[in-house]
Image (cartoon, rainbow, N blue to C red; front, top):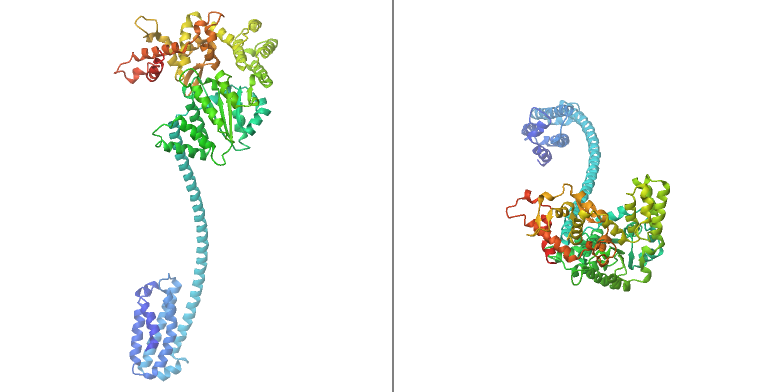
Length: 638
């Protein structure tokens, strides 16, 4: 009975879950199998019934085929009710057909299948229910289609949201990568900074900008000499304001890409007084400003076993040349200020000779993208090297230029009009001060500053007398300052000056004031008397040294320094030792004697300490840490 196979195959795929899925109280597959089995038993000997059965099962098969689609599908109340009716009708057809077969009415059935017998009625009813089910299924499919459409739209929105989130995550990831890269760069930067022990020139630059009068030197930075140097490179040697040059080049970079690094030689800071400090400062700035330069610097760091070894000065100079020789390197501006503050007194070669040799070699390398500007006073040894390296047009003394005089005029007028004390003077007195200083300044900003600092303390009645007695030179100005030191403080002032001249690093107020507590004239040698320490160290130091020193804030500490490099130069110069003007010769400071004083002060402090001294006790000796680190540096000069 091959014609029965399709129906049997469909029924065999049903499980009892079909009945559960459409909520029938019986297993539809098992029940239909039973009905078919009874029907087949009734016709097994009736050959004539086969065609009728085939026709009957074809009618039933079409429904069973549809019924298969309900397996695994969620049902509704309406679908469960309709399917129940169809299953009941199907079983009724099987029962009626079986009854007809048992009564041997095959021919009658065959006739009535197309007529109105009870079997035909059942079959018609099955067709009606099947059509109703088809409509319901169509509606269900339509609902499902709409639901699918909604799900598709929702899925599209979800996918778009996911895409947006993915893009957002990608953005966050990039940001995180950038942050991680920046953190690693900062960590490496700090490693290299410590490795190079590079001095920070920004402290000097900020101080220079702060004290610079607005508009100063614009006549020079906008003039033909400076503009020609910025275009054609080579070496520019000037004596005068350098902070304006640095700021001009920084502004220039906004329109035209360029690299800039600068260094301030500083007589107050040992790390800024030699060629190593210069190279470390320049290299770190260039590396920090340019990724390719940073790679060159990092290669040097790696070659020194990841910073476990220090590079030689030759290696540092070679690193700078490698940066300059990078393909397509940007124009590179190197600004070197106050070369004359690099010492030329100790060592063979001296620190200044090493710097001059480096500059000579660098200029001789003829880098087309290199622009060097050096500012210094025209000391003989500096002239002997820099004159051959510069053309006459690139050797500029700002003191001799008309623009410098205009700057001094502007500065003096601004100072007199803004100073609180001078604003109380009569207008004619203020105008007289302005006219006198402008006439006698001779292009020297420092001289004008010193006179203003003195005049501002005058009573109105003594202004004209002070103007008539103005010193004509800086030396005379400093001699006047020495003359103002009270007689009882001159010995202390001289010792303070000695220590400031030779100190390895800048001294804090409390460190320098420790000299007031040391009795240098004791027969048994210097002795520290803690009771001699001044209550106010800052006031005591300032009152002893007149206007020749200044106290500045530096990284949370108050540092004592000479008010200008020319003060140190004045105190150590032979012209003071041989001066015939007044009794100032005893202020002259030979370097060996100054080192001896500071070495004795250091040892005196250290001898107050023993191996059992604790941290709290140690803090009561302000000079102790400096003494422990540097007493040998001073003692070797004795």
